[in-house]
Amino acid sequence: MEKGKGVMGSRKWAVEFTDSSATPSTRDIPDPPGFTRVPHDQDDSVLSRQKKDAEANWKSQKAWEVAQAPFKNLLMMGFMMWMAGSTVHLFSIGITFSALWQPLSALQGVGKVFQPYKDPKVDLLAPKLLYIALNLGGMLLGLWKLNTLGLLPTHASDWVSSLPPAREVEYSGGGIALH
Image (cartoon, rainbow, N blue to C red):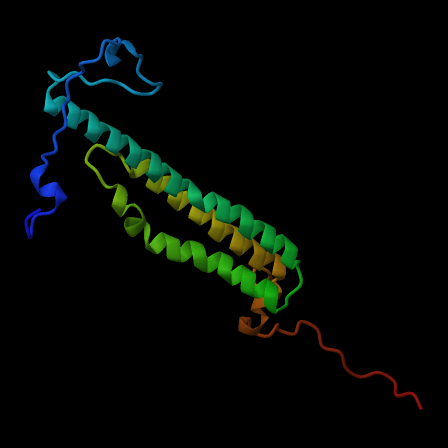
């Protein structure tokens, strides 16, 4: 063995792709379930169009999933408000303002939420409208809770300080002094 040449120096590796066995060909074995063999003569444009259609379909599905996500938050927030009770204390006020703030901040970022799913083949109007409607429902739930806590000025007695004093209609005077 020469210096600098290893055992592998004189060997050449090769892989032969032809089937020289006497057993039946692998083409006789059926394809596994879910595998589809693509013919070599199929045009690449058809494949790319199918891939783009599949991607558009996936984006549409994901956009609908994102649009329905506030519904889960709505149920959770409703349960938390129910557990907080109807008395005015720090926990119930915090939950209520959280129920108002979360949908408000979600409504401000509608464009950012649906940005990854923007595609000319995907119609995002219906998912966006559902997303907005569910978040408005969350805000209404928070307003309802504020009303049940009595923190919304909905009665005339809530505005007494801004009303002018009532005009006196009757006067009484005189009478007998009792000793």
